[in-house]
Length: 285
Image (cartoon, rainbow, N blue to C red):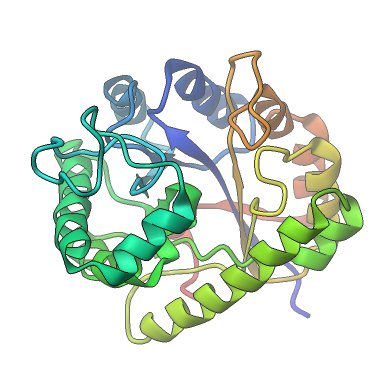
């Protein structure tokens, strides 16, 4: 296989909290982070936008939230999607079924997605890429609604979570059943998404790493991954935070430590890998 030439290194949940914002800036200025995905309705989004505007070398994309987080629209505008506080339910399976089956949910979802893209545009930041909280952006209903918006607002790329189940299992056999379920579900979803990306100008990478080790992107895993990878392009995503309290699935300070690791930077240099962003990536499928 062709040796890996370009890697995108992304932090998710930018704007969710000040601790995450601080971690993103540390990882970009002192580590290997190239990109961040912005929650436009996050508690600390205004701070994140200012930091990003002051740091044009950081590529910023839209982290769409349609489950387990705050909406951009008011509860009265999308009453079937959120509770009285404006928060989406945490149950991704239940939410996904509603989006798939209910015309009312689909109509409100279309309004909410448009509002999140518009909020991002209002920041004045170039739209590097689009991805989603809990990868709900690859849900068929969500994906079909976001594609024209991604093109309209000038997104350069889109994340398809095509992780490597067998590599991850070789590193850590814990939660093997859960990882197998994720691998099957996302392989099918990503294949479907790729079929709908024909003739679109959105870049995707050959692999995306972070799903199987979500919130647990330890230095040893990432170093081993970078040493062994042979695909031409890949995205590695993390959930860094400066908050000492870790969440198992992220955010946590462990992911930040990996992004700042001299060992990670060394293997990137040894292999001649180019740190990239979606706007600088060769458009490959």
